[in-house]
Length: 203
Image (cartoon, rainbow, N blue to C red):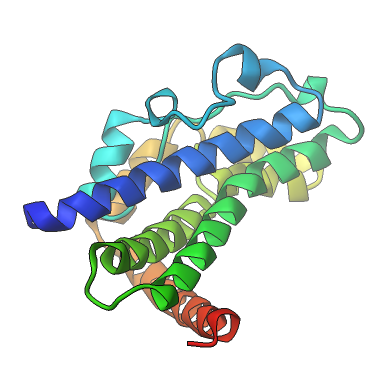
């Protein structure tokens, strides 16, 4: 990747990761958990959310993560399991919203301008980040979403994966299994976002 490409790719990464983690914290805070706020995670400052390895992986392999927002479901109002599901979904959903905004921006600016390239990067990064985090492997959001959907008697099987989750992810990334699974899905989503952008802007 050239220096020029990095000038719009890195800002797009920082925005994607920051919005992702901020959204987790905001939903948890809304549900009554003060943990994200107490730990300084209710902020749009990227420095509060970056994980060095996860950010590097996003730049190099285009699959990565930020520093997870810690939450305490026992502080949630109402159904704790449903609350965990909402908090876990918040990150990937926020990335898809940002990707859609990128699609709108893509159709509003001059072709081949800096903002045009930034918009393209923002769309792809946010879509891939959302899909990657939906994988049901700890510590990704997908594993917590799975906990929110499964009966409690099955939670122990997900918890047992936590110790091996990072190793499984590395194997999946290095072997390009994630790419083979996620790229076709991402391409469809990106096409849909591009069409929605055209409909909204009339371009």
